[in-house]
Each structure stands twice: as structure tokens, then as C-alpha cells.
Length: 84
Image (cartoon, rainbow, N blue to C red; front, side):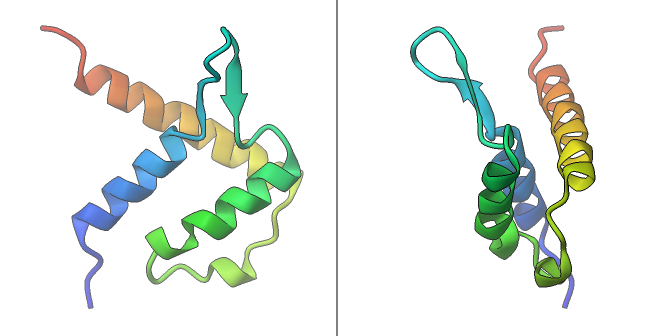
């Protein structure tokens, strides 16, 4: 069965939403710690059908790569809503 585009969109939105304003003038980053990253991986697993998320080891290296991917996803979203 082919993965539906909606599932990819939701996974990207979930990743992009892991950093946001905290309501007190600061930033809340769910991926700031390895424990936070592990929690997000567990929460996001159902959004990644076909991915063997149980085999993923939450390492600092992987966390860094996912944070870089998040930056790219957020930049694409920002470009998509840019005027003009």
C-alpha cells in the first residue's frame, strides 16, 4: 500500500511544531534534550507508516540530524506563506 500524502504532511507539521513560543517570551523546544527527542519519536511513530521506528536508536547524532531537518522543514513552510 502506498503512503498517503496527508500522512507525510502531518509528520512534517509535527516535526515543525516541536519548537514554538513558550508564551513567556521564550522558546519551547521539545527536541532540546535527548529525553525530549525520545518522547517525540515515540509520539511521531504512528505518523511514519512503513518506518521501522522501533529500530531507531535515539542518539545525540540522530537528534542533531532531526533538528537540522526541522530547520529545513520550517524554512520551507515559511517560504510557502511568504507574500509575493
